[in-house]
Image 1 (cartoon, rainbow, N blue to C red):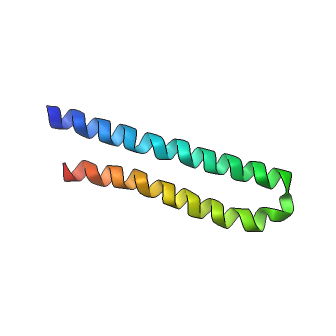
Image 2: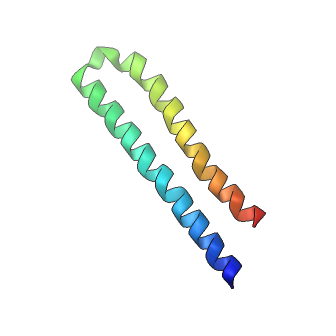
Length: 68
């Protein structure tokens, strides 16, 4: 019983943070592109790299789910 609750907390909080982080990354990137459309070629690659790095933490939380 305690293990099931621990797993639920790990996965719930583990994917909540990256979801908020990815939303912020895309929000700021779109804001930057809307202010300066010529810079979109420089912003978009960094946007996807940042989103990928944030997503890594969510995947680590799901991996920890299977370890416990």
